Image (cartoon, rainbow, N blue to C red; front, side, top):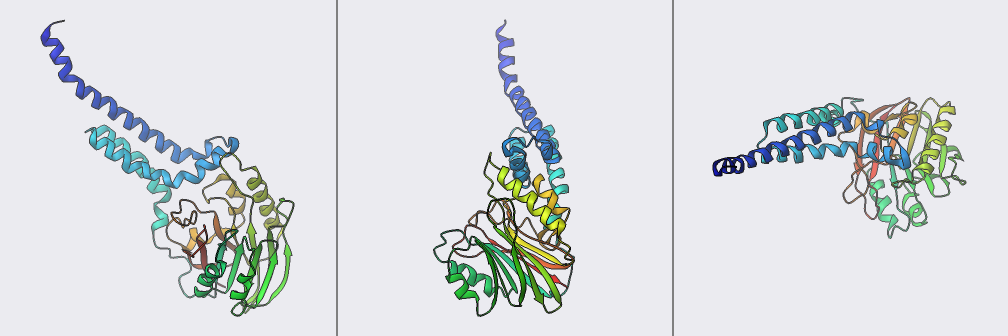
Length: 315
């Protein structure tokens, strides 16, 4: 090999490396777009599919990373490839950031749901923040401290409780029963609230926990809850709770076929609630039927590892 050909090969190699790296960026961009579109095709073995489903909104963070990599590689093809997952992500989730026009106007009543966190050092402060939000119904999970009732009972004189879930209401509660979700003990309740406009059925729920590789209990409890709601004949119903399930998770579908999501219909953004310091998913929900949502949002409260969810409804 001549000295000239060696020099030419050495001089051309950086460009070749850039092209190869640009090709890698392009390939990753295409795979990201495919995953965004087809995340529910990932087998749900040991909860892997649920984990991917739940993380799908966060996959958009890969777009600017890939875009920066394409710029550093000076690859136009890679930049064009990065547009593909960007467009897909915007098509799937861009709409959640648009102001909602659903149910414009004043609310007839407002609700809040909060996982207090077992062992909360100051649950009174947590529920005090909820009461200050001026809601009419408060659903709580992981209630294990009498200080909660002491704080709420003056403003919310009516209470229904089953194990560690409870409902506080400004209006009388006609009836309440535990709801079996298959845990072996009731961690959900159904109450009939005598609101000024008529009876309102309210569920307060804490489903089984889900961990990476261990979602079977959560999946079974969600299926049991969906069966209970399906059998419920109430025309106006609100479900408050920590369902340990993200709205993008495939196992959430049985509930979304029966109830609507207040955050999706009347909120703005993803409404992430956990972990409270830097939330990256939404296990906490306000679901409904037979009502018109006017607002929905997330409230940061002290001393809990979950943020609270709130919603307003018109009768």
